[in-house]
Image (cartoon, rainbow, N blue to C red; front, side):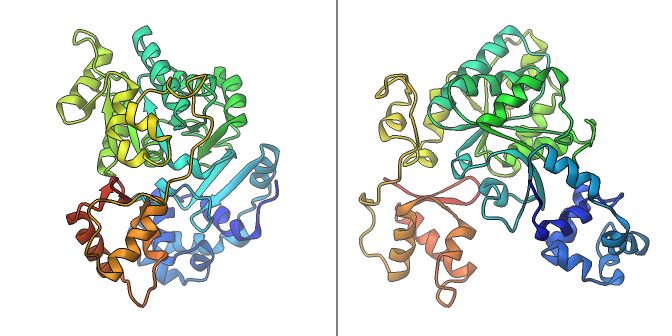
Length: 395
């Protein structure tokens, strides 16, 4: 799989020896593209926080000093695709986060339906109870058509991936190492199955080994790829709690399964519930909480009943259905022309603020004007704002 020439500057920049995730993001955020970074001066780069003139010179020398030959060979051998913020199929949930990685390594496939994703995470040292709960929840979510995201680790993560695949659903594994490394090694068979109906995603160069310093960054990626995060089982200092914290900071849903108060593996999830996470005892509880986001993606009776066994012979919705454009809210009288225009777009599908703004006439709508119109529509109970600045019509 040949790498497009437009991706080479991103790859060269990522391979600079001192290029951390934060520095990479800062450069792209400031200069808007990797190509623009290489067109800047050392003084301009050194002026950014976390950079100095020595590092700036190393960055500018990268196109000549750094060979991408080995990395490109590995990318082709493993069938990896490089995805940047400039690509249409860059994950929408991730794009709307406060820290969108400029470059993703992807094996397998990403689809537009993956925006309807839920992270299912928990302890590596899972109990039988935790494993059973992860299987039950993940399988049901997958049967409803949601993509299950997890961290490809031992324990709860692996159970979540396996259950989603057994249910015929999609799953995305987010790695804290490069895609040329299978970690844990016993997950090689799972890796193969995920690639058939999902994707493996990493921010790291191909041969990056697993490192404990990478996992907080991996956890952020899990949280922001998803509309919400379910913590099945976790101790007090579990990495799963970091993921839940990241989800909360990104204004995403956070769910937790209650556990035995005498067990170490339940202390983290029980603490999350004390701190405001939504207590869930079944996958239906999650669907009920997210119904406004999922309405129009899942079949209406699935959302109304929160029961995947109804209306389909094997309990699974075969494919998402299109949102109906014929329904109207009961609160849409006396709308201004601007309100009517915005509402018309939202009737087609839920839209994030930035996406909605891009669909409107820039001469009539700027950020402030659109925010004002959306607030007015919310007050008229015509629309609702969901986590991540996702707007949708109220039925």
